[in-house]
Image (tube, rainbow, N blue to C red):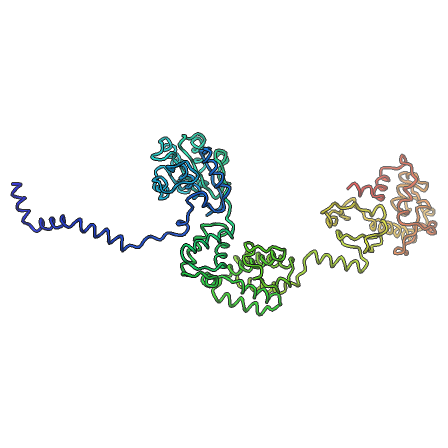
Length: 600
């Protein structure tokens, strides 16, 4: 029966089709393979990947890191954990791969891996079983760390070391860091950990103390420009130096960012990279237009400046980018004004900047312009119209040379006061005489003792105006206020003398009130007894200065004597023995001789 069925199957069309497929299958397979190879284009490799460093000598801008790692490999002092930190795109992951290749090279450990052995090729392709790269951002839990702890118990497959490269290690959780501590501190002899991070401050101190730390630095702009020029030569692309320098400047020290921007520029520039084309395609403001705008502002031609702004915005340039470029332009002018001529700091050659703008503005005005533009960039985010903010700022820049700085204004006021004979401002260096006239030569007659002030310490000039005691606070009496009190008391005594009969003709209970000094001291200078009216001595009655000439003495008998207000106040208190002065009198004396003021 089976043979009968097989004979029937052989005579069917299905059997013939199967035999045909079996015969022609190798030919079909070969045709498909060759067609796929020759018709599918090769995958494009970005410049950052194609030019990734393969050895330590190709690591750009990290001489200290490369030299230290090479020396440790040559001397056999290989640590069990490394921590690479630094900005993005400066070579942390590349250095980790080079270190792994140097440790597992068939000719190593060597500071210069061969790059042709099976281990080096597998590591370059990312297919090595002994090099495990882990993304710390997506593998940040305790379970991921537990898996690492289980894997480190097994020795490497084909190399000498099993290397764990954990990128963005700061993204691990706190529990994951704690779970990794013991493994990092005492790993097996064939295990090497390499951690890479851009935020070193987020890595716990317990992790840092168990690792050798290497800090990667930003790459200088001129170095990046030279590397881009070499890349252009390899790719057969013509490029202007100004265009390459702009790319290097925009990368802000990151070589990977420079390569990425270079690929973008090469895509729309073709075989010739030009600065003008970059400005046109990316919406940038060129240096020539910035010079024109700054010259218009320096010449007070606000209309021309507004017209230029209108043309730039109509061309599609973003206001934020325009403010950034203009702020960078005035910053370069400020550096030039202070003697800085490095192209890497200025962004352009020094002779490319407008000489007219440099001549018309000094450093103070350039600082003011830069401050205006930085404030403008912060304000346009919350403004009703960013364009209005920009036009207002440009209008202020048009009259920038008329702006007066606070030190200039202070010097002008001090000069005006000196010319008018008024006291100089505090901290201006001039001296003031007691009458109030300022001395230009800095010399004047010494003021009285109560007007002398201590010499301010260096750096505290001008602060004494805020350190003076408030004359209206309790216990603080100025000299002018003392004179006012003396004059008021004299005036009250005169009014009482004119309006009432003499005290001798009046009963004791109707006698007029007398000043405080007379109430405290008797006529003989001794303290007055309660309920006993007393008269001031003749020496206590005085005549007031010219401004108080209309005020008469307290009693007709003492009006003929003349004395100063200070004598009027101090006379009843002078010559009195300390033991005969009452507590009230002692308080009065301390008030008028300034003791209370000094103690406040």
